[in-house]
Structures are given as structure tokens and as C-alpha cells.
Image (cartoon, rainbow, N blue to C red; front, side):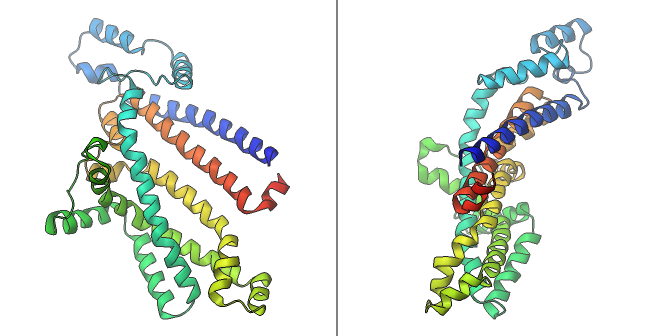
Length: 315
């Protein structure tokens, strides 16, 4: 198990190093100069040069990359060009929205998908299975921002059960904060629940045809007992893969949903920083998101080894 963990840890470090290079290169070659953007097209060359020096843009790209990576390793993400405040503080203010939103959506996705997948697998080829598969096909096909707009129209404008956007903050109470995140979480969760349901059903159907499942039924176990005691655990590996990928997507892909619901999260911060050419914020926040995604995938790999000991033996 230790060897397996070390190999995955080395892979994690290499992935982070490559990701940092790619993120820095892609953002740095984007057209436009932050100092020129901030001062406007009529800025004097002397003023422009002074601002570039103040922002640290007058040194080589290699020096900026080394300074950026070194700062992140010590928890210093730099200072925003636009707001003139530490990026770490801006991230800290907004991560309390994005991570709870992603977790909330993931929980909803699992709560919907697990029983739906079990139900469909237990009723393969029957009306219940066809109904669930039809609903999941719709969930996969429809984008989450359309779900978001329909949820706002139905539950915020017509029924007035929820607000159409905004976030009151955790200081106003957990209930008020979770209520404001409910519609965004549902909009994020529905397409992911559809995918997870289909994977759950397929994995269970594959396991149901195995010899050990037939042996369990031959010993007198009912179909439900066989499914719960033996089928579910052995079907979890592909499901764990999708859950890990889903949380990565939910954590990294909330830009549109946070825009629709006007949530002060990391996705909205990235969008605003791109618009303002605030490169240090974009680089640092995107790198933080990538770090979160890679760490999540690392934890999923470890979960594989717990669920399936054969993976530990191969490492």
C-alpha cells in the first residue's frame, strides 16, 4: 500500500509542475498588457513603465514564473493588479462559497444517482428501467445553465421559495446560506446525477452476471440481498472514478452557474479577473483549482486501493 501511495504521490507532484508551466504560459501569451489596460490607451510611457515596475511586469517571464511558484509554495499568491489586495485573501473570501457549493451539488448527485441506478439495474428491461434511462438521457443532453434558468423561473420568480441570486454569507446562519446555494447546487447536480446513474446501472449489471453473484443466489439469498451485500461493493470502482471526476468538474466548472446566480465564488472571481486582465489573480486561482482537482484524483486513486486490494498488489 505504501509503494502504491508513493507512486501516486510522485505522479501528483509531476502533474502539478506541468500544470503550473502550462497555466503560466497560456495566460502570459494572451494578448494585452495589464498595465496598459489599467491606465488606458492615452497613458504616458513614463507612467506606464512605472506601473509595470510596480506590478513586477518589468522582469523576464522566467523570473516571474519562479517568483510566482515560489510564492505559492509559501502561501503567497501575489497581489491583485486591480484591487491591490493579496490574492490569498480574495481566494479565502470566495472559497467558502465555491467548495460548499461543489460539495452540496455532489451530495445531491449521489443521493439522486445511487437509488436511481440501483432501481434501474434491479428492473433491467422493464418500465422502471426504461423510465430512469430516459430521464438520464435528458439530464445528460440539457446543459446545467438551462436547468439554472428554469429553476430561477420556477422556484424564485413564480413560486418565490428561493432568491434568484446572491449569497447572504455564513454569518447569517447555515440555513440561510444553504438555502441560497440550493438552486445552484441542483442546477449543477442534475446533469452529473444523470451520468452517475447510468454508470451505476452499467456497473451493477456487469457485476450481476459474475459467477460469485450466481453462487450467492444459489445459496438462497434474495435478489435484493445479493445486490446489496455483494453487487454494490464490487461495482463501486467505476462509480468512484465518476464521483471523483464529478467533484473536480463541480469545483472547477462553476463559472457559469456562479454568474447566473451572482454568487461571489472562485468561478466569478476568475471571470472578473479575466475581464480586468488581472493576470496574477487568474494564474493563482486557476492553479489553486487545478491543485484541488489533482488532489481529488489522488484521493480517488487511494480509494481504489481500499475498495479493490488487487490494485495494491500490482503496484
